[in-house]
Image (cartoon, rainbow, N blue to C red; front, side, top):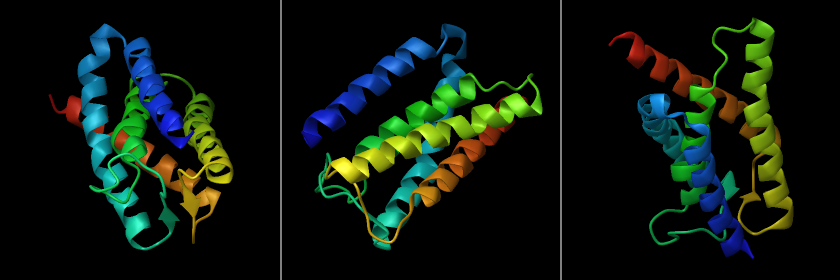
Length: 152
């Protein structure tokens, strides 16, 4: 079952990427994807290295102890979508709601996976660490991507 869940994440994330990124924003989305690889992979490796989270069943288990699916594909795809559709011209309230909705949905999904599958296991970790770290890396990705395009 875990294999099919991971495979489904790859397929669903790809469909989201293709379906939700407008053609005129592909360059922005690509940079957002690439920028997110850095904090996602670093934090993912750190939480596994310090035995905070374990991924008992994962793709490429001989290559990395972290979740390759989440750290190197799903989260960068979410980051690209988040950054492309960020409501930068809207009110602070709308920006806040938008910004907290992404980590909230992702955290809920992670908790469900942690409780019902062998894809992830919290050792010395709590759901709110996930929420805070997702909010942080999405913000860093957005600011970095905007900074890059501002300098062009």
